[in-house]
Length: 283
Image 1 (cartoon, rainbow, N blue to C red):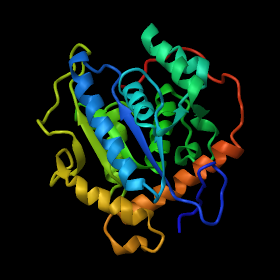
Image 2: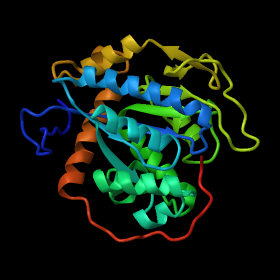
Image 3: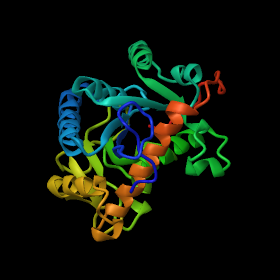
Image 4: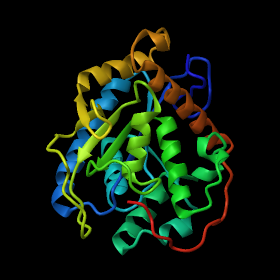
């Protein structure tokens, strides 16, 4: 059984469903021409996950609500009726000051007014809280650790370039790919970036689930049907983690997601703005 489970109201009960969390990491500088395709891919995935979790698990979407990919993902979660939470790498006011444009600020305010949010640094289960991460990049590395450790599925709205700034999209994806022998699922939405000097996606892969290829810098596709089968098995309490490759990584995240939701609903502190300034952020 998962380490902790919740009923539909958030209370933990013996007969509760597991919590399957789907999170997003992505670029802020998404090209306008790529927005419709990205939103369509995200919408299709969320609808498929609703089918996967039907009567098996409680589906939660997690978005930090930055401009670009995060907000696109959050809007699609709203439209498809998926419960949404907002893990923030900084306290609200300081984080809002980094968004960079009025439209992103407007959407941030509107989404926060309707959905539960929390400061990631308050969650004591975060692996990176054991690290000394005082820099701006550290706040985003902490966020990436939280998303990786709780999300059974991670959506990467991304140009396909691994690595980069700590806590950025390429770094978050690379660390998840390297985390387990059979990593938890990553759903890639390929796109180009509009920032000067940023290259176009390095492959012509279509949106879908990915894993590392024969060489670390290579990515290959995985059958969506196989991923959905693994997710269904992971949600079934009668399946042992060792019975299927990749199940252990997913089951760990189901349990950690349930712990997070229990903490968020019952123990998360209500805090003021702890961070100041507007540092350069990873993208």
